[in-house]
Length: 228
Image 1 (cartoon, rainbow, N blue to C red):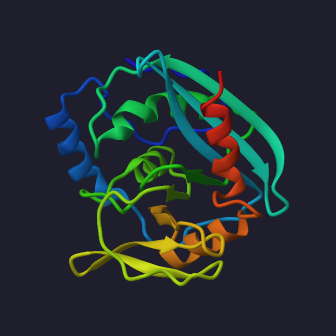
Image 2: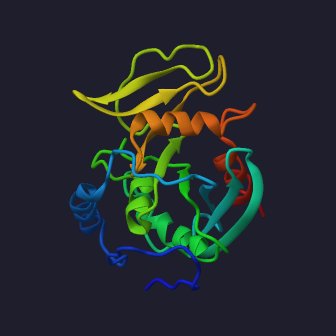
Image 3: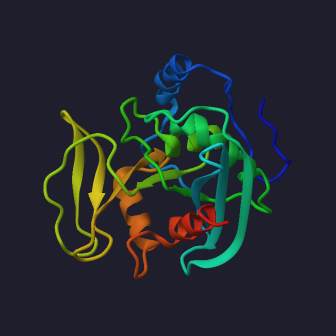
């Protein structure tokens, strides 16, 4: 069962959420074909940062969605929603644990965002359908995965200077990039979510970075999702 308060973000497609881990894997394998890995963006004026934290020993999910005006990155709106986490913690299936509460938070926004930056994986996922892709497909919104750690894949050493990146590969396929957002600081792992190509995703992420390792979007969202 999933409940949404009506808002401006439209859900373009939906599947069942009360599924077993085996069924969740099957959904990922089926829905990954819906991911668009080329640019289908309009004008980007409202960019969303999305992160999910947990309370009560993981029993309650807390989603934070922060809207920043683009490109000056000033705060426009923020929404926090809490709800019971109904799906277990299983690496590779985190979207089934986190996306329902994020969808509810998106539905409470006054206006829908033009782009989603998620503290999560997108195409850089064993079944090429991480949370950023899952959320992008469900809402038909351009989305990018900006993860702090690598889930799968290998890459060469990342150039040390700000903005340097190297492809993240799984076997012979490029699935994302390791991106240095600050000189000498650990890279982030950027991958296509939906309706954005990798080169554009890297450019957009860097355009949201100021003096911190994380882009302002997910940095704001992380602080709020981890709050009391």
